[in-house]
Length: 453
Image 1 (cartoon, one colour):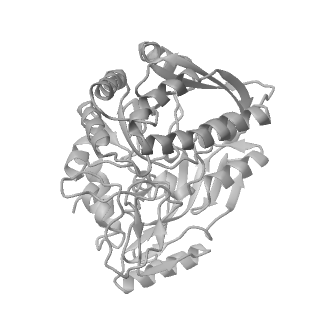
Image 2: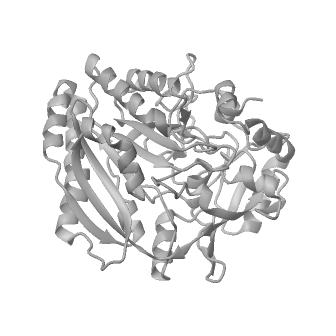
């Protein structure tokens, strides 16, 4: 799941070195992290999962669970026992009266969203892709954009945790509430999640309005655009003044999905096929990137459509990249964006990927990037295999100067000292970890860096 810190403390996109003859058995989606654990299991039941954890602990092996690898960090890397998710899947209970759904930890969000839709229900908010497992997405703080609706973790109402001794711990607002508060976004440090319960609501329609705006206009009107829309986000194309904005708001209908051909042209041919070619060309000839960015910016066009939530919130992402994202106090976002623009303009950086900006309301989850404050997210990306170190280092310097908290599943160089100063309840989380996993069965190098000892 992500990069190992280098000796300078910076995140590297290169997989960790292995001794000659060692076999790689798992690699993340971006290809920047790989591992060869001593043991790999894929349990299909909670009982099987608990027994595997108990035996591994008795054998002195560290234990980590992996999702689909859409994180860029080394949060799931282990040399001990790796738990794969593909058999621990499925909807366990849809409680229409309570407005909840309970789902096995390895279930992909795509399966959850489609099953809920078929039953007439939906999550309130979601991220922009749905390939991740539910437990991986929750544990690393996956979020979308929203004025009042928060991250996936904030929609969790209960969970079941396999502890370091193989015992099961059920958690909710009224049962082991302190563990529940921490484990909703637990980085895999407290145990292995076996199932999650989410709040759901009757399915609704969203109208998406996408249109280009200039950088000057969208930053000048950012607070107004945020206030007037339930879900607002935008993408800025470096080397240009072009942005693409997206406003999602609930609609009474009727549904008016994108025509199949138009949707394929926009979301597959242009956003994936043509963009893949542009990124490949840019990697081979970086000097061409600014010109290609300007052409792409001028090609942006407006579109409006109305559909069920998961078809509006999410879209396919087939061009592989690496990413760093920071959560800032929302009031700091515009100033940070202007500094980022100035960085690109005064440097020799060649950036082919847009910068993504989203928002979230404050929440009360101890390690949530939106804990205790209205938040704006700024995400920077580079095409997989490109040299990203200078861009990410300079962007990180800007974003941390504005009080940024790094996304737990994306590249960053922050350590426990910095993070302890960023999260008021950091010590509370560490205390729960000490109680649940004093022997660090679920530890690894990434957690040593971000949580300390």
